[in-house]
Each structure stands twice: as structure tokens, then as C-alpha cells.
Image (cartoon, rainbow, N blue to C red; front, side):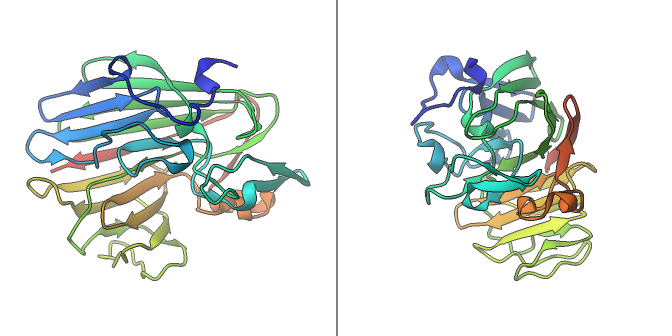
Length: 295
């Protein structure tokens, strides 16, 4: 098994040689490819930290820090009891949650990634994943980050590199600085999953603290976050990233552009297309791009 698809192990620690960064006149992004393809920090020259900075990469894989940002391949959210049904059989996975039962957010953020492209303002990373107990299908995942004048573009791609069909999805999981502003705007067609908050296209939705909210037909979200000078961020997804999960906690704010509904694996495979989950034939791929603006 190659280095890129081997487990990080019981813990990992960022060494200086493992760190890389890109920057322009406004923004610096710092990365730890070996630590699950993570963004360690995103800092604006005027506003300071946009993401909760990940200062210590010494952590257990099933207790990942609520900081920085990490990739979601080949699915996001929870697979309860660590199995799903496909082709009339149960596909069992190794739990990666502290409860010892469930699987969350796929294995890609628990694997070292390889840098495949780097320049002053762009960075590309790839993970060549080989089937194991965490995910019994081969795949290749890639992330490409490019700074623009007012933000960051995040491009994600998933390829089924195996010989059998596999379900799959993509997403990005940032931990933004928290907000004391109650006007988080979520622009979407409808709530994808029932929550305590109502949802109207373009409405200033009340995002309840400590409650996960899930949306479909999502286009973008805006919010003022508690940075040094109270920055406003806007996160926008393309057609492939038309679902969104939002979680507001006291210490961070997650706005996650994703390709499928939370809990999609609970549906029968015949209903997966209705949830956004894709069934990828060998060699098939999917890709999506999100754009983060800071102003």
C-alpha cells in the first residue's frame, strides 16, 4: 500500500518540512498535506484569521480538531452503524467515531496527501486511495486551491480508479471563526433535511446554535465572523456542490459545500440520485468548485 493510502496512525504531528503555504497581497493559506490534506490556517492581511487556526496537529484520527479545513471524500456526514446496502449486500466499514459505531466524513482526511502542483498562489494535492477496511473501493481524489484577489477557490475531483462501481460524493469542511451575528444568510431552494430553522430562498435564516442545518439547491452563504476587524465571508458552490451543511458552535462556524444530502446512505441505492449521491462506474469522475470571498 502506498504512502498516500496508508493510515496516519494513532496520531500525527506536523513537522516543519511538511508545511507549505501560498499567498498573495491579501491572503495567506497554510497547508499540511501529510495531515489529511488539511488547510492549517487562512489569514487575511486586514482581518486576521478567517479559519480557526490549527496550531497543534497532534491528535487521534477519531477526534480530529475543530479547526482549519479538510476534504470530504468519498462522502460526507454520518453512516450509522458503519454499513450501507449495495447490490443486496451489506458493505461494512471500520468506525471512525469516538462512539465506536459510526463512520463520519470518509477516510480521506485521515490519510497523507501528495503535493502535485504548487506555485506562489496555487496548490494541488492528490490522494491515491486503495481499498481497505475504511472504504472498500479504490479512488483518486484531488484538491486544487487558488488564491484570487479577494478569496480562495477550492476545486475538488473524485475518480473511481477501481474495477467495480462505487458510491461517491465530494465536499469541503472548513471551521470558520465563530460569529456573534445572528444574520447568517443561507441562499437555497429548500431545506434538504428537517431542522428547527425555517428556510426560504434568499432569507436571513435563523441558524440555531449547536443544531446542524442541511440545505439542498444551495447557492451561497454569507456571514460576518468574529475576526480582528469583523470580516464578512461569502461561500458559493457550483452545480455539483448544491448541498450545504451549516453548524454554528460557540467556538467555530461550519459552512460545508457538499455534493449530496446528509444521511444519503440511509436511502435505498435506487434513491441515491435523489439525494445527490453518485454511483460512479469504473473510470467515472465527478468534480465541483467552491469559492470563498473575504470582504
